[in-house]
Structure formats: structure tokens, C-alpha cells
Image (tube, rainbow, N blue to C red; front, side, top):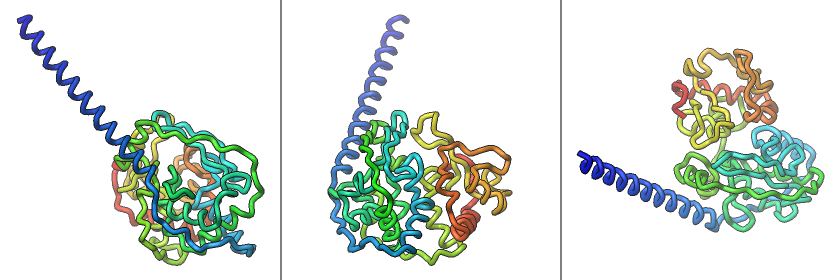
Length: 305
């Protein structure tokens, strides 16, 4: 009997070793693929777009930067666009958004290069940017991109050094699995030119704005649930579909209050992780468009991402 137990333990030990070896090989392959993709140089031409000094264009850029583009939120480039805040995502990695004013990277980039990184997620050296949601903004027309660039050029220079963004092993694996978008340019069809509808309070226009929600609430269904690989400190995104576990019995006024104040229908406050500081600046057209789009999303139970 003792010999049988010893043999079983030996077999189990071999199986565990094989599984560990296989798992290690998988992680190594995923990390190698991630590193190779990050080093890829994209043949994406610099668009022939230049800043405008028109106050109306700069004002439009101000609105976009502080609303749908989300550039000015605290966990991104910040209110002064000078970056510098460290966002720790545990084993996934940590991010430090750069200083994009004329006192930082903004001085090194031409207007066209800024436009390219906004729309294509491609840096000055031709490689991908990390974590910036360019894949959600590829649809912006030239006029909107010019407005953003024009506003960035208009803000005062900030003298603040750029910190280092580090992607952890888990972050690399999750990226390759399509669950955490560190590698941005790989997710964009650079040859595709989209023509969004005019800004109107319609589901069609709202579907473009809705892309900004999918990274957290779920690429497929927008039904929320834990973000794969995220540490416990990251809150669980809510269900945005018309399901009973989501926004099923909500009205536009409920949604509008949530977006502007961060307070849910039940009176509970959203976690500060939700960028209310940007979403509250959506104008009336954008707010109604996003709401009308969310009402067309298939009702899906919470947690199906």
C-alpha cells in the first residue's frame, strides 16, 4: 500500500511539474509577443493637420479635452495637462501619464504628430503608445482632432518631469488575451477611415461615445463585472445594459444625475475611479446621445462583460 501511495505522489509531482512548465512557457510566449509588438514601428503617415488660433476652435478643444477625450482627469494628464500622477494597478503594472504641455512632451511633438497619437496611438518614434484610449477616439473627424491639438497648444507650459510607466508580467499576458489594452496601436485599423454622424442626440452618434465605456464595462456586452487581472483596489464596473441588474428601470434624469454628480439612483456614490470629472462635462447633445444608445444595447445580466 505504501508503495502505491509513493507512486501516486510521484505521478502527481510529475504532473504538477509539467503544468508549471507549460504555464511558464505560455507566460514566456505571451510576454515575448507583447514585447515584440511594443517594439513594432508602424508605417502610419503623420497627418497634415495644424493647430488653429481661432477662439471657437480652441473652445471646442477645451470641451473635448475635459469631456469625451478625458485628457484632463486626475489619473491621466491632469487638469493642467502636466501629468505626473502614478496609478498603481498592482501586478498588472503602474502608469504615469506624461506632461503633454509645451514644458514636456508637447514641445517635442509637431501638431501632426500629436494628431497621429490621438487618432492612431502611434508615438513620434513610430511605436505604440501605452494605455492611452486612442482606439476609442479613432472616429474623431479632422476638425475635432485639430480642436484638441489647438487647445493643448494654448495651455500654459508645465515644468514637471515625466515618470516611468511599467507593464508587469500579468499586464503583458492580459494584454495579449485582449483583456487589458496596454498595447494600443495593435488594436487599431490604421487604414480605416470612419465617418461618424453629426453630433445629434441619437443612438447612432451615441454608439461612438459608448466606445469610451467599453474598456471598463465590457467590450462585448457592457454588462460590467470584475476587470480581469485588476487588483481588489479597482472597483467593479456596473452593468450599463437595460437588464434588471443594470439600468433597466432608470430614466434619463437618473442617468444624467449619475454622470454629473457620481450619485446612483439608490443614493450611493460611485467610486472615484469612475471619471465623473470628465463625464460631467458632456453637453446636452452628448448626454442624450449616449443614453439613447445605451437603451439599444441588449439587456445582459451583470458580470458577462
